[in-house]
Each structure stands twice: as C-alpha cells, then as structure tokens.
Length: 277
Image 1 (spheres, rainbow, N blue to C red):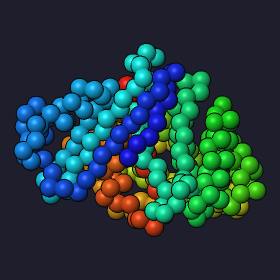
Image 2: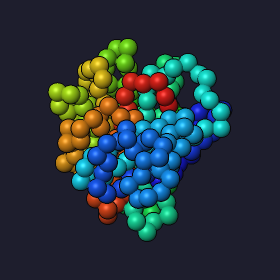
Image 3: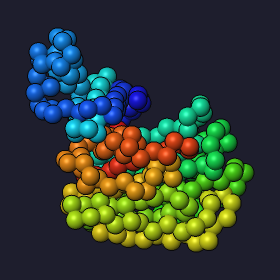
Image 4: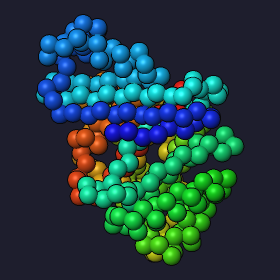
C-alpha cells in the first residue's frame, strides 16, 4: 500500500507491505546484508532500512510479515508533536473511491482526530465522508459536540455518515470522544481494552443524541478507531510486540487480518510520540 505524506512543507510517501507468509524466525538476522533464504544477494531489507526516514517491521511465524517505510523529500524540523498517528483507509474491492475518510487537526494545542464512514460505498459515500472531513477541519476550534452538530447540518444534502471525533490530551491524560453511528473507538493498554461510547444515528440524516465523553489516557496507551469494514474481534495481545510498533504498522496488521472484505475500511492508531503523518 502507498500513500502520500504532507507535513511542515515536506512531502513523501509511506509504503506498507503486508503478507501472510511463513514469517521471519529471526528479524534481526534477516535485516543483515548478505542473509537470504532464497539465494539472492540479501541486501533488500537492509537497503530499505537505510533509505527510509522511518522504518519498522513486525513478523511472527505462521502469521506473516508487515513492513513500514516512510521516505520524505527533506527531514522534518518542527517541534516534537504530541501524537504519532498511522492509518489505513481503503475502498471496497472494485471501487475507485473510498467511502471512508479520516483527518487530523492540531489547533491551538488541541489534537483532534476524525474518522467518518459515508453510508454504503462508492462516490456518494465518498462525498459524504469528504464533507465531514472538510467541516471537521473548518470547525477545529469548536468543542467536539459543536463540530459534530456542524457536520450534521452540512451533511444533510448527502446520504449521511457515521462519525467519531476524538481529542487526545497527553498532558491532561485524557481523551474526549464524540461518536454517532458505528465508528468503533477503544483505548488499549497492557492491562486491556476500553471501548469508547457512541450513540446510534446517522450524521446528516437522523441522530438520537450527541454527547461528549471523557476517558482516562494512561501512559503508553493506544487509541484505536475504525469503521465497520473491520471486524470487531481484533485483539492486539495476540501479536507479541506489535503494540510497541509504529501506529501505521499496527493499523496495517489489523487491516490484513480483520478486514471484512465487503465494505470500505479505515483503521487509525494514535499514541504519544515524536512523528506525525
């Protein structure tokens, strides 16, 4: 999978390679130049790591391998941001446009994240989720409930969307969350997973209630948000060491192993960190 990167005037690409192969018994050895299980020169993985601004890999026997590489036009030089974010957002097989969308905004010290799922799939669903992302960016200075209400008004001419907005405040150790529809949210720690609360309804069509909830944000926690294109039975503790990897890599593994295959899918992971997409 390829996606473009834009941050602080820098552009680049993110490459996420996923397989369901036999996995690597010894990842460190596979990264050494000259090591090969197929009779090649054995310099491929090492070269990718040397050329990448960000490189990460996760592999387990019998499950497969996931590899992340980010390459930029120039090094980043902003102050270290609060969050490190990674996401996979892909259309249903056979569709050209994805009916899901996600967005990030850092506005006056606030870290805001949106995931939206336009009803159905195809161009009409994409138009609804894109409008939700536009309103989210335009309204980033408002409280979360007001952003959701603004999206509800703006999406009335569309087919509507499920929507969730999170505000992550590492310094306050808190996550604020507003959800309408079936965008799932969870805070994952070494002790377990806590689901975030959404109300039934469709932004732009009919809503029962819009309410902000506040949840504790423990140290080393992960925020997981995804559309209903991902099955709900995922668990990070099934993968040794995955929770410590780059958020894009975590999102890729969950997509690989739990996508339903009959709808658009978005998986977004956020944690405290030093990088932004």
